[in-house]
Image (cartoon, rainbow, N blue to C red; front, top):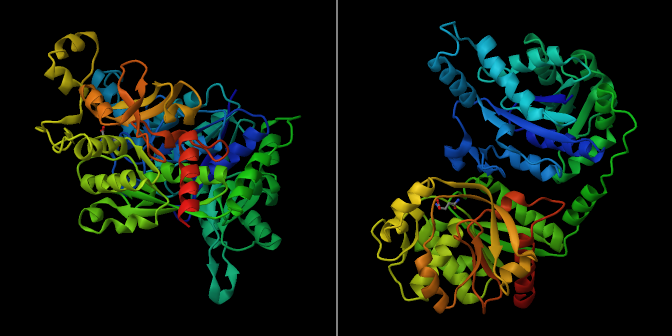
Length: 545
Ligand code: GLN
């Protein structure tokens, strides 16, 4: 039977609930337990797929093609054994949609449909299902205790804890200990109040994680314990860390894992071996020098929009023993501004994106990387633009474009599969075979890498699996003219033979990929593309300094 740890937050938002939850998960995994994680989001949007990265940060794509909250990215980066799926993230909107569909279908036989029990039952069933087959499921409730929106989730957690009982459920609550300078004191009152708020909905926390900028003395933790009915040893101090990857070690030093294992009756487990996490921190704290990567994108105001790319670069730095400094360059700015802002870059990266805005600026950056021999990595839209840039400036197709921005272009280098099949009269036949509309290619898919290419050498194998999230593809009728002009297609999708990766020979390092390698990079294992990209950036640094 699965054991559940529910995670709530109080006092203020942005306390890093997801990271704390994932750190506990990593620690329990290090004790030999199988652990999965769930995130319940209180907003009404049915899924994060259509939400603006400006407001909400990146959309994280799972192996099975779910578009999820970026917290799931943290979960996968902290865990080695569990992969997130569409079961591991759901919103209030999804729950309501489900219940309303049932109501419309007549499933409730005209009975009154209510938050309790219909909404709460749906939430509970989803939580139990996501936990199936694991020793422990850690379930994070988005938002802050006291929010109107998260109440149905809180009520579901309360009910589940009664049904599962003490031996199979616990609640971990995150709070903030603010420091009041005039009194030179850490204040515990907000923590007391947020626990009271929890108690008023019938939930007693078992572990408190207290976020703080300062050290906390034993008197303070005893005081918190006394006022909140939590054991003193279960009041855990989480002081701001230099890196989030120190937190599993921090929690282990405060015996969070023992606390949980005792409660759930997990005896005779091995001690947690956190040496790989220690190595990650050691490498992060002792880089040989700093390399600079210019990231040319649209959402530069909110770096969370590229969370997984930022993380993947950090991981590549760990593997190469350098600090990777990311310089966010506004693509639209590059359209009018002097390209020389890129002259300090040891490498250039163009990440994924949607829509036309900034694409000319991104192509200016790609051209600069190509012509100046600066290591370049293009991801998704970044690959599409690399192809268009090459067609325009090398292969003699100045009007080359993507039908995403120019529907009537003479050279639709990038388009929807349906468009170029239509062109050849293949569409009807293909439609009869499968459903190919303008839908997103989502989730993990296999690609085959061409022998003798750099891309294949980087991966060290012929068949790879990477995650996708895009509608447009490289039109295969342009493969030949581009090949004649020197661009190499180095990988194709295994099932449909679509272009997956390209590279430019006679360049120190120029690879662009249709998929999103950033989603599968982790601090302990990295990712070959990012690792080799940063290795090339190091060479560039050494050659130019
Ligand atoms: N907008 C492009 C497409 O839909 C690229 C998407 C992306 O970069 N994720 O194909």
